[in-house]
Length: 168
Image 1 (cartoon, rainbow, N blue to C red):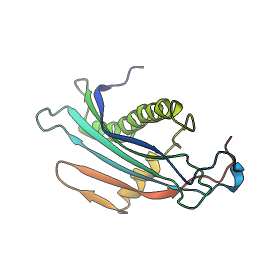
Image 2 (tube, rainbow, N blue to C red):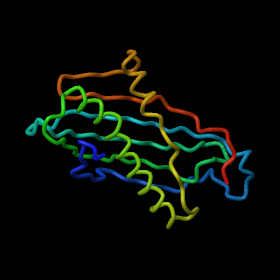
Image 3 (cartoon, rainbow, N blue to C red):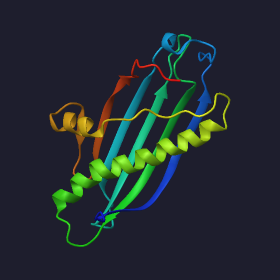
């Protein structure tokens, strides 16, 4: 079944990947210190087009300053996507699909881009951890850290510690 949600365009407004001095590739994986990931999602209708939506995701990967860090890179980016819908989709369905599906689509693109850029960097490929956008938006609906304007909604994810599971 085809989705009524269409990704029309996406681009990076900002992108930075820097080697972390506190990363030691020789350190044991289980001994590495967790950093933080910060996530901000903004979404809302495009000003001139009622069936088009704009989503912006800002991600900051902040490695531990104390060696040895788990994350080999300091990563900062902002990706923007423009989405549209086929005719006949109710507004409440559009809002829900833009929030969850649109955000997930853009984050998937960003994860692939980060992995590709990191692959040609000093410490090799890096895969951004998965984020739970369902839980993030649920927390917002429950009133945590929400900033809502008439034409734009902003979601701020709390900094999360990386999973303690060993990664190779």
